[in-house]
Length: 336
Image 1 (cartoon, rainbow, N blue to C red):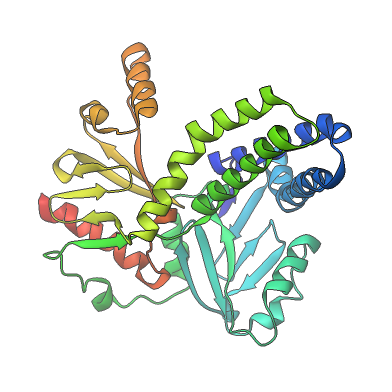
Image 2 (cartoon, rainbow, N blue to C red):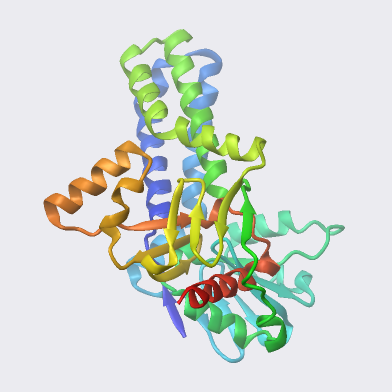
């Protein structure tokens, strides 16, 4: 099977941010003096590193070539240019938008990585005295469905049917918050915006218009999310609960009842909740800006609203992931 690259929301937002930082640094670098120059050097460094690791995705997308190739004998990660032979694979599993490949002897494959940037980073992360770490493939940037991911995993790992069906759907399941990539990225954005605002308010070069604009963007888009992250993290609050009656996304404070749910589709770090009548849940959206735009799109263009749960902030261990999906499936069946 061959799977091509896709431009996901995460990928597009990273590129847009990198471009914005590059333009910002280009126009303001000469006007900043002293230690503040270090901030702009770091911005350029951020852009270069981003492009270094994502250049292969861009190339594969533009050339319409596959980013992942699988067969009965191997899994070929075209981005990193490394082919994992079936005989060398100990196990495979999916977790938080990645396909993890645990090898019998990962040290052998450290020399087989064809892309120099990825080879440098992965060799750096696999210290000689550390425990064996699995290799991983970013599924968020690949056009691949949840069923196809499951098929790949089942092809490289024997599944015990007794263990698969060993789920008690009489008890609800609850998962708590974890610092995933999206949470860490938002925290980084808040720190970066705060540094830019501080420099333009108190630095030698003052640009109050830019400072107020960045401050407004941070307060409206980033700060509320970061506050919620810390609230759930410090309070050790559950972010997801599911039982025979509903799925409760406590982070967004929306409760989806099974009798309203048509289908649950998990792709990478996103769980799409497809409803029979999604317009019924418009008033359940707590964020006023999101609620306004969802209602506007529905009333003006008759676009049905989409709902989803961010799996990146939910603490589901890799070994629990398939069982988690199986439990949700059994809850949905039990309700019907």
